[in-house]
Length: 310
Image (cartoon, rainbow, N blue to C red):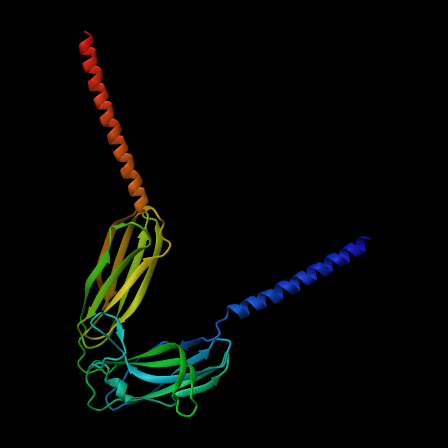
């Protein structure tokens, strides 16, 4: 009898183990996106000389579950007056768009887990301007006509950014134009927004360090973000503590560094109080004042009645 129970128990364990394994595989397969691609690397930085012909490349991997087509093309990489990226406006810093050539523009039937290499070349003119030049190479995922290359349906787009330093007379200059950090929040999260401008002719990298501490100085959250600031443009960086409690008092520190030194720093006391707490507190204060008023009136009436009885 004991042997039968042991055998039955072993069978149940085996069945449960196999079932869990099958379920895990099924869940992973269902969670995996149908159409998805990744780029590696996502950025490139090179020092180029006037008259030089540069050859570069980056990888695209199909990380989805279906076979897809890819279309690759070149656009200017710039920033508009609103400090956001713009891929339609040409400027003196995006001349490299016309110097960039792709080895291949269309990649058909890219299978799951397959990686393709995108090769490109840049022919720098002998009279190229001093400073920086910038270009972005976009990769679109979807279905494309195999003959004309026309898009039938585009579902996703990623971009490879290329930064070139052409040397010559370089001028590096920048400033922190603003930093928005509120002292009071009705609801989480706590955040800050910085804006940095590049007044030079070559890009630089700005680092925004952000930390939140308790009143006793304990670090509750800290992070930092690097952002490339292109010539004659500005960029905004938003920092946010997404796990900010609904109520609390904190020290929030912001530090911005670029061109080899700290350009801005601040340490601000910030309070997070839900609006309903303020309403309840206001009602309590009102009731307290009302009660005090009634008490004062009652005391006056008692005194009057006492005098009258005498």
